[in-house]
Image (cartoon, rainbow, N blue to C red; front, top):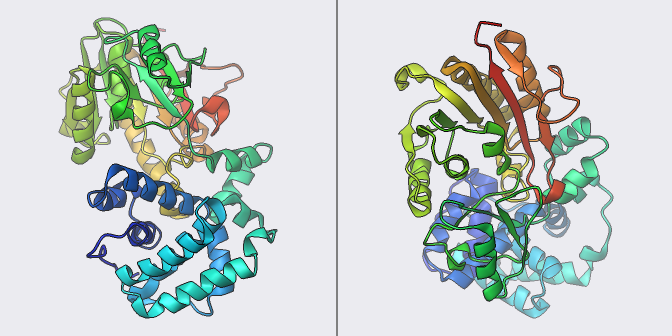
Length: 441
């Protein structure tokens, strides 16, 4: 699909449509393209663009089915972005409280900014026909369209989770709650909660997470008390289990592999302040910049290393690690509710490539773990091929690896703990804990 430049003049709806186009047609991540348009707008408008773009991404199959009904033939070339503008208009008319007149008028006006001045009449006619025909009130029986997922992922979820598929799909389409982790090296949970109370910010403290706060409503975290002082980090509840499962001890050397953006690195250091060293490793230098930024705010000093985890011979200093957290590259199918673009960026062929890479890194990390050491394998995926299947295969080829269960009923053929999206308000996540033989058993 032809690349379309960002409109020369800023316009909320045109810029939002450009974001949607870049994600769906160019395969770019929402983080990258939102950052580009957000330089042009104030905080309020940026929040609107993000909310609308992510909302459209959650409803793509439905919006496209309506578009196919209303549009005689697809738009092509540099006019393709107008289709995404129309989808934005349809989303506003159906899922927001904006008035019909404003939604139609502003969407039509935005066409000019996307080089579609001659298509304004078409945009107007489609949106008017949509409301006139009351398409939003007509039920669509296709379960794939109802799910908001691509067909391949819809089928996989039903294949692997026949009893939980409906809940997984429902929760994957709900905006994720905002979890915070209190940095106990800078503040206590009680003190942080008192600061929230003073500002009448509503929250809950889940009993399962000793350092966690869940905000009832969305907030700009940079405006929360103690942000600049490093009192807390943003980290989902599922990810907050990593440090406890790893259980670092005083004097140990710890590796956080595939560490960016650093949430788990910070938690490891906070969990045990007397560790000898925590190395944060990632292959993406730009993402490691975020690790350094987050660690500076929290007051932590890990060793940050940009290197290929699958090739330790190019960077490892020969000193074994006592414990390794491997948060492996994955499909991220467990965090679609937080990053709805993932469902459209991932393709079926990606899964095989990812499982191959996971296996390579898994073996590499095992080779630099000391005898008697612990490795936590983790992903934010819900696909068994990346999780229990990956760990079972690893155990079959490493006789010096022993599964140390995190929950009841784990076996070497069905290892680990799979958290599903929405479970106890958490993201979808997977953990397995393995211990390396000392050779003296």
